[in-house]
Image (cartoon, helix red, strand yellow):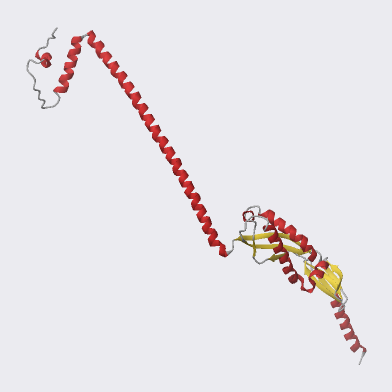
Length: 290
């Protein structure tokens, strides 16, 4: 065999070895260089790196913020009103070496169940110390921060950092919904009945006050009208008396004309009066009796 026949395989082996020694670290990940299962170095900066083929192994971990959706969890607040809580968390690998030691070869898939147990324990501890009304109110943001801080301390043992914890929903268990809705309906009906009763009572008071005001105003108006009518009658009588005192004959003549006007009104007025009655004194002659 010629020398070229030996050189080509050797070069191929050397080329393959060089290619196996080179690896690329992506900007979205961290890489651990393991030698016989032990962590030799951590590659966090993106770019080309080298390793000893066969002897050294590369393990990659995602350096981005990862989601963790937990299964719905039933908790019992202080008022013994059970709630089904659905929460989620955001986390990232903070210490790759500690993470490797904690989860071994299982990686992210092995860390998620342990993180879920930590999160569930914090949910039970924090939500179990408050009432269900607090869980369902605007104060829930402070509770989520408290859960995050508690879970963050325990998660450090895994080499991870809890970024955020959020409660997606907190509902009553299915078996309690019907009883709760019925209790709420009865409570609202009782409140409605109380409001209706108070409204009727207020309406009755307003109506009674209005009736009293009407009676008072009507009585006062009648009183004033009677006073005015009496004063007018008195003034009229005074005027008539004064006129009668000044010229009794003219007053008698005026009264007779008024009587004629009222008696002889109509097309067929019939009077049964003696011809010599005083009623016709001013119709018998055009002279005034003195």
